[in-house]
Length: 406
Image (cartoon, rainbow, N blue to C red; front, top):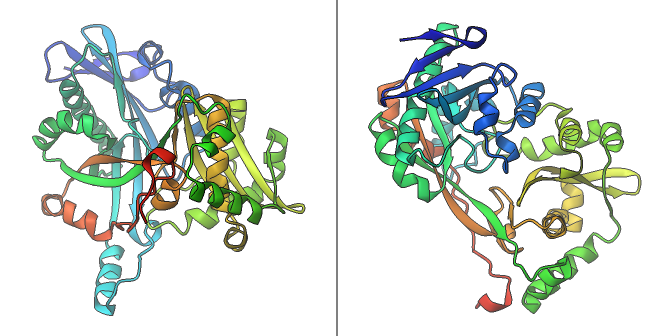
C-alpha cells in the first residue's frame, strides 16, 4: 500500500517481507537517508556528482533515485537514468563486407528508436547501479532493485514517458552469479560488454620512472619513441580559468572522438568539463596539449579515493597521427595515478590493445536488459551482438616478469 511521505514522494512495499522503497526525481529531493547509506569512499554515489549530472545532463536524460528500507532503517540506494536511443544518431555503422548486409543494417538501424530506463550510469565504466549495506545478501539486492526499477517505469509512463527497455548496467563476474537467477526470472536477457581495462599500481612504483623500469626494454623503447614524437607539444594541467577560456576548443576536440564512436548515447554539453573542475577542484585534472598557442588535445582524470578514472578526452586527429598523442596521454594518465598514490587506474573501454601496452588488463563485464516487446526481448541478445563490434586485439604484456614471445 502506498504511503505519501517527504515532499509528495511515495514509499511502497516490496515483495520481500519488511522491505520498502522510496522514489525521488532529483538528488535535491532525496531525504538525508541517502547520505546515511552512500559509500563514503566512492564519489560517484555522492550528492555532488549527481548535482553535476543534473546541471550538465549527457543528453535528454531524466534522473531517478531510490532509497531502500528494511523496516524503518535505510539499507540501500540506487541511481537510475531515463534516456532515448535513436539508432541513426547514436550508432556509427562499421562497413559490412557485402552491400546487402550493409543495407540490411542501415534499414534495421532506422527503426531502432527506444526509450530506456537504466539502473546504472551510462557515462561511467563500473558498478554504479546500486549500493547496499553489507548485511543485505546480493541476490536480495537484485530482487529489490528490479522491483524498484519496475515501479520507476510505471511512474514515468504515468507521466507520459514511455519505457521500451529496462536495463541493468553493468557488473563484474562476481555479481553475475547472484544477478542471473532473480533477473532471468523477470525475463531479463544477459548481454556481454566490451571489457574494461584496468591497471593495478604496484607498491614499488613510487615514481613514473619506477613504472618504466618495470617494463621490458621493448616497451621502454616504445615509451621513449612516443615521448620523442611529441617533444614539440607543450603539456600542462589547465586551471579553472584556462578551461573556461578554452571551453569551445575543448568541446570540439571532445566531439572529434565522441562522434567517431561506434555507439554513443552520452552527449556532454560544452560546459561539462568546466563544471567537473568546479566540483572536484584538484581531484579533477584536465591536461592540455598545445602546439604553439593552439590547444590540440586534452585528457581528463578523476580521482575517486584509491582509484583514478581516465575520463573523456579529445584531440586533433592529424596531430595524433604525427605525435602518437593518444599513447602519450595513456602514459600521462599512469603518471598521474602514481603521483596521486592510487591503487588502480580505470582506462575504460575501446582501444584495448594499446591500453594493454601500457600495462592494463581486461576485466569482463555483463549487463541485463528486458524489452517491453516480447518478440524483441527473445531476440535481444542476437540483436545486441549484431551491432556490437568485436575488437580484434592482442593482449600485450609490457612488464619484465611476463615477457612477450613474439
